[in-house]
Image (cartoon, rainbow, N blue to C red; front, side, top):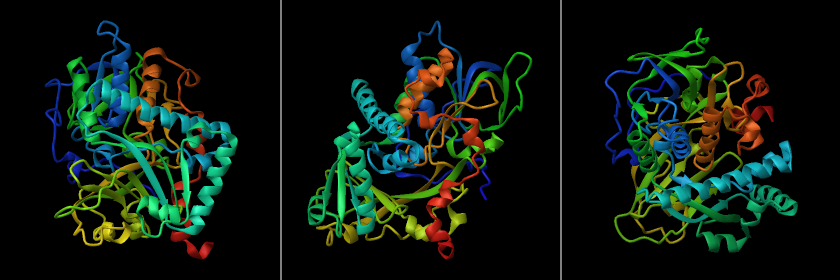
Length: 457
């Protein structure tokens, strides 16, 4: 059903890309180098994280030559179009992982995400990154009693097992949940440490530092194909719109577009078109101090952050478009908003938040972006089976912000030290394997089975 393809030349503008930096269309050299040690395809968060950790652990004298190839502009993909959250999961997907893969494997993911938030916070503070970063609390609200009971049951099991990240997540139920969250009809909520930021500005800062240290960035240079085999010197050939480049190692930081270059990923990292918006008010409005998730069911949820300028970023709207499968599944058209979701956020704050009824809140901007959903809903990080010298870092399934930074640290170890997976800090569930590539299940569509195929239930 999925037919992965390349991104269109120009996506519609998101709020995050309304204030572009000086390297948005950067090309370090007029011509592409004929050969590099490492080629990274994609100039988003994954590439930025990899470069940051390589620069931190090497000197100019012992650093490999690195080329970053980007089809469009810097950070023009999912990270430049997301909801602005930096939000670890300590109980929701973690509970599902515990049920399927065991408590130890689930605990690795939970601890890894908390460590990511801490590491990103430290990076921003130590480097004085101007990206509107705020460390606050997340409030995840359940609006269905059945859904609240199911999530609370999983949370209780994690608490009983002693998971440290879950211990720092607090549960509030009943009327107290509505009072604490300010969300109308709340049946329960969970609260924990999380952050929010201007993602484009973070990535721009990371790449600016990388360029200043000699990294070659080539935007507006799509990779059109990669050779099926290595040449006699063990090098891969990348064919781009501006000529060919040979590389000893290649990192696919292409997320939703990976299947365009590697056939084995056509059904493994699936483009998923989603919607986000910016809401403003004409005057004063109630103060929001936390980030939010509003969950209506297992599959239907919205996500929200309050901005320092008083505006609200809200994404989601699944209930509006999910039944129109072709509008989102395998769809890479980020030039226009999904029609079915266009009016979803109108009156959103008035509908869901106490005290906002007379705020006059309105949608100031709405945009779309393409996430890369892994077919088993787990990130794919590490060497690509059967392709020596090739690496994957993608399939973050809309949850890359609390995972990518330290995945970049692991990727630096793969590239610099030929490290084994066990020598990295990655959760075991993130490892790319032949078994995962051969797994026929599509858990993306399975998640929505009750909506898409109600007659089969």
